[in-house]
Amino acid sequence: MKTQNELTAEVQQAKNRFGIVGQAPALIAAVTRAIQVAPIDLSVLVTGESGTGKEFFPQIIHAFSPRKHARYIAVNCGAIPEGTIDSELFGHEKGAFTGAIGTRKGYFEEADGGTIFLDEVAELPLTTQARLLRVLESGEFIKVGSSTVQKTNIRVVAATNVDMLKAVEEGRFREDLYYRLSTVNITVPPLRDRGTDITLLARKFAADFAERYRMPPVALDDSARALLMRYRWPGNVRQLKNVIEQIGLFDAGQTVTAPMLEAYLPAGSAVYTPALAGQPHSAHTYEREREILFNMIFRMQREIDQLRSEIAATPQSHPSHPAVADTLRSESPLMPSSLVRISAPRDLGSVEEVTAHEVAPDTVGEPRTMTLEDTEKETIRRSLENNGGRRKDTARELNISERTLYRKIKEYGLE
Image 1 (tube, rainbow, N blue to C red):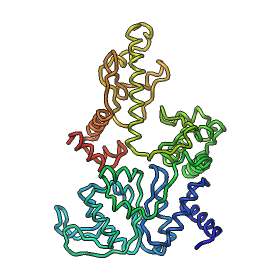
Image 2: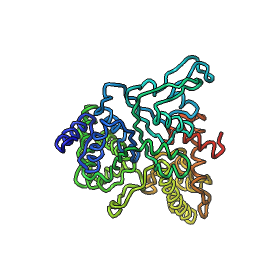
Image 3: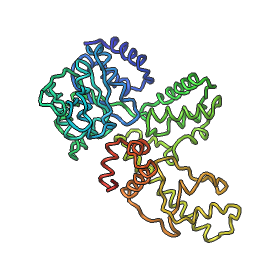
Image 4: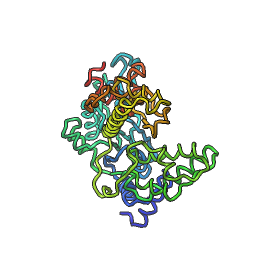
């Protein structure tokens, strides 16, 4: 058993090696747990919201384990089409299916003796889950199109941002596989719960961006740092990095204030209520992000309907801006062409901020009621049209996995 001093030294070593920044107790506890379980060949499930950095923990486990000199393979289960995932994981024989022109090794065979990281494991089809369970229980698998049982000596580390117990209850994930994968559970904290780590990360991202592109670094004043701490960061570390890099590009060399920072945060979600900080946070999902976005769109629709009614009642009140009146009298339903940031006009002089492509109001009168399912279906349909029916590009634009897109297309009859 390692002493506390030895653990502390190894935690610092892991942080330095993998570029992990922060001193939040929950983060240190997660790193410590990964180091402690590394020497023991147990399956590990890493859970946490999207963008929290879950991918670092399988690497820590592999690096501090006896398997560190063997192969480490990371697989994004959500990015592999359902029809080919068994072949990708377990391999196939020549002629097993159309296009199988030769025998192929799967990831479980390639990583024999090492570690395999299954990201987005909740996206696995039920048939593949059964195959994975057999590997975990006996180390055995069968290639697609073969009848020969093969053995593999492999350690599995999985990660997900899905509420697995809910997925089990809904029949989307096997209960026996869940308990096999979660022999040890590591929870990665969301950024909003990491306190001053937020400003440490912001400073690091700003310095890294300035050094990489040889640009003057930005600085944050007290008001900007306070806003960083108040904001919820639904996209977690990934979102913070994107925001800081945008600031580093467009405001290079400047001291950033809170109003300047707000311009880079999505509309309608710039406030984090400290009173809620002590309450448990539900797992972050893209479905939840869409719901928040659609609620924001519906609120914008009501505001635009109100503006349209006022302009219709007093058409001469803004004679210098006929484009605004024309836009507000449009009869198309409010709907973004894709899941993109939509900026509402600050005043009637900012005509360029609202275009017919971004916001098309409903007919005059009360706004038409649309369910979230209707809006989601329409958004997917329009995105498919914009991408010429290319599902891979559509999934990337909507920021969801291809498997989720396939399921939604079938569910809404959009084939």
